[in-house]
Image (cartoon, rainbow, N blue to C red):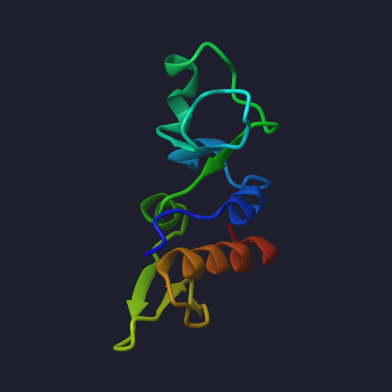
Amino acid sequence: MKSYADIKQCRKLAEFLPIKSADMCFNISQRHNMPPLMTPYSKFNEFFDISPTPDFLIPCWSLAALLNVLPSSTLDSSDDHHYRVHCMERFTEWYDNQIDACYEMILKLHEQNLL
């Protein structure tokens, strides 16, 4: 099961979502001896004596963080383990994981200037 948005999704979300809404981060630099995923993003400076930069640190959203971004949303599941999001009288297509369904709804609402 996918627990977090992937790097490609996170880069796109970081273009318009508030960084403080992210609850994790990807470390993509090989220079720093840190795990690839750390928590929490908003407290990064307290843990390490370096500042987060897009060159090596990408904000990342868990399912809970993505759902918090969506106003009054519901996550529907099917009998065959597929998921879709209902938000603001809109539905996503069915996806095989919850993260992708939330991601697509966030993109849809952003494109329509509703988020």
